[in-house]
Image (cartoon, rainbow, N blue to C red; front, side):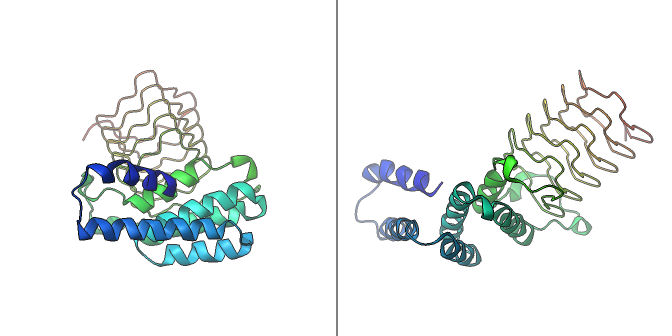
Length: 247
């Protein structure tokens, strides 16, 4: 992830105005992070984990991205740290992108997820699920993930209670058994998503795209489905009791 940023900068710096102090500062900052990341590769995974956590706590986009990048590499190379790192990343999202429905946040995209939150979600979504321990659950409840790109994300059994996923891209995502009670899914793209057995009680799905989505045995009790696209959706065994199809 950091490599992509660095390569992109190298690719455009030659066409940008020269002798620009601001651009020079950005380049030096990215270069410094590149050196630090390379140095970290030779340290123990425990030490790399400590450094990555410190980078997340630094609260700047550059350091957060560097930390997230290193955390993903550690999780891939050292299975014993896999779930610890997923817990660190979900905690990072919850603490830095909280959703408070009582403030009546609208579903517009003027406050899309920040770059570092999207990066953390991307790592979580594409993790090696075979390394997930049994009887553990990702916790992304009460989070604001409006407009997030979670295409083909694996969020099976994830706790997304009262999460704001309005206008998010969840195309072909695996949400089987996920807890989405009272979640905001207005305008969310759930095309071909797997929501088998998911709990969507009192969730708002106004204008959501559920075309060909698998809602087999899902609970949609009291869910708001006004304007939702349900064409070719699988609804076998779904609980639609008191679901609202019109306002």
